[in-house]
Image (cartoon, rainbow, N blue to C red; front, side, top):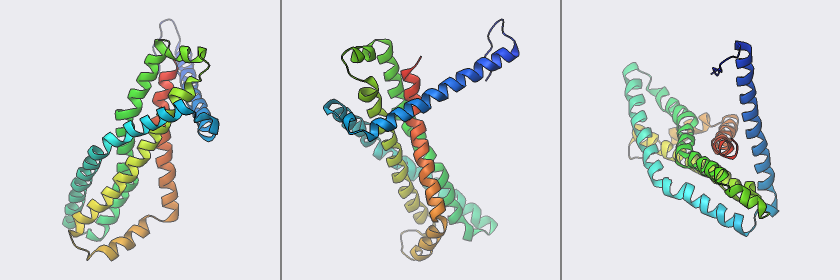
Length: 232
C-alpha cells in the first residue's frame, strides 16, 4: 500500500514505498545469509549459545506438539468427511482420496503449521528482540564482546525453523492417518490401494517441491519477525 505523506507527489510516494520494501527485503536476505554462515560455523556453538539453542528448541516445539496434533487431526477429519460426502454425491468417489491428500498434505497442513509457529513462537520472539534493542540489551552485549546475532537471534531462528518443520511433518502424518480412517475406517482392507495412491501422489518431483516449499516457508516464518525485531 502506498504511504500518504503530506507534501509529496504520487511518484515520490511510490518511490518511498518501493524503497522501504527494498530495504526491508534486503535486511531479511542479509540476516538470512548471516544466520546461514553462523549455523555452518562450529565457532558459533559456544557454551552460552548451546544453552540458549537447546532452551528455544524445547520451548518452541515441545509445549505445542499435543495441541497442534489434536488441531491437525480435527481439521483433517472434518475435511475428509466433507470431501468424501461431496464426492459420493457427485459420483467421484475414486478421486476423493487423491484430491484430499493433495489438498491436506501438500497445501493446507504445512501452511497451517507455518502460521501456528509464527503466531505461537516467532512473532513473540521478534517482539522480544525489539524490546531488547530498545532497552539497550543488545548494545550491552556488543560492549561485552558478544555478538547479539549469534547469542540472541541465531537460537530463535533455528528453533523457529525446527518447530515449523517438525509440526509440518507431524501434521502430515496425522493427516494421512485421518484421511485413511475417514475413508476406509478401522480396517486394513484399503491399505494396498491407499499405498499405491500415496506413491502416485508423492512422486520424486512432488516430494522435492514439497520439501523445498516447507523449508522456505519455515525460513520465512523464522526470519521475517526476527528482522523486524532487530531493526527500527
